[in-house]
Image (cartoon, rainbow, N blue to C red):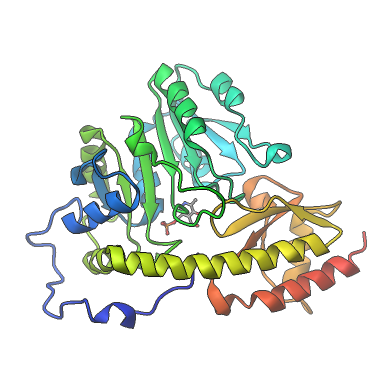
Length: 347
Ligand SMILES: Cc1ncc(COP(=O)(O)O)c(C=O)c1O
């Protein structure tokens, strides 16, 4: 994620008389916030503010979509590597998970023929991330159109977690799925590009009014109604002038750090990666080294450096390299120590 702004950044726009109750507020979330979300996602004109439900982050939006749509025995199709929440939720409802491996040899692309072959009349939901976490691969409009065709053939729902959208390094932001398919559900939040994950403010966007209404009812049993302060600050952060400024700073910082990481990877003989097309993380392959063993040694003395092993994504020979977090992440020191461990690696 991008460096997190301080509360002071928003104080000039906050109203000290703001009531902190729910009275007179829309259960769907602040209307101005919902319309900013559509604007920023390129969905104005395609979706209406009532197609947006504000949730406690992307995590809750994904949860609500799964829990209301998927029944025991249904099939869920997802990607590997991808956001592990899909597997956890499929297990929780006793659904059958069908996993499609992204093709590292073709820059982590999603093999659409394999998706087509996996999708059947039992497929209730397809869950993908775009940009992909953890590879930073970006699906194009054509790929998304093909996915819509595949889902539509059997009436499956298509959930695309777009939490990393907005930080594209190659090409434009991909179109948002909610504008392309009536059973398309976009999930996202202010957590990543804007670095505001502590606000716990995200969304689900879908043109099917029943889906949104059912999600409102289900949310009564999770976060219940609205996080008013989170919504108010998110609304300020998504105003066009503030958003453009924050995104331009996030892009400059992200681009610089990404170049730094890319140079680092190029210098290591036992490490290679496909540079992320978008987002702030990428997946690097370790030559002949187990990712878990490597991550554990790196965390121990004398290196004391944290990274996520690829096994978290079902990829044992990879490690995840993160770009975000600003100066607090201490990237240079971490890379120096990782370089040392790689250079000294035996066995
Ligand atoms: C792909 C993906 N989805 C969802 C989340 C959760 O984000 P949020 O803070 O919006 O709940 C993350 C966080 O890392 C993520 O990477």
